[in-house]
Image (cartoon, rainbow, N blue to C red):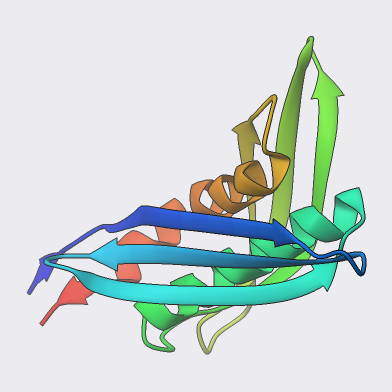
Length: 134
């Protein structure tokens, strides 16, 4: 077996007129093998970040075919050093003790997309051990 990376293919984020939001994340592996994650949430600034992060975690779970489960513990946009950083904290479960993961993404615009990328940043190391081409 050889290892193969999951790549960020698409990110769609919409805000509803009713104060809700919806995120759709597509990850791709190999020759067009797509893994989709979707989530809906509150249209508040924190709700939008959470929605995007949950959709990304769902796409990752699909990509690893249930070998890992991810639980979003928190997400926040922080202003530091004259820049905005989106930080996520996740719990990763693989049948043993849960592992806590933290990821970040420097982003000035489109903060929900930054939350999605921060999840990928947090999970990058553990995914390498879970994704194999059969």
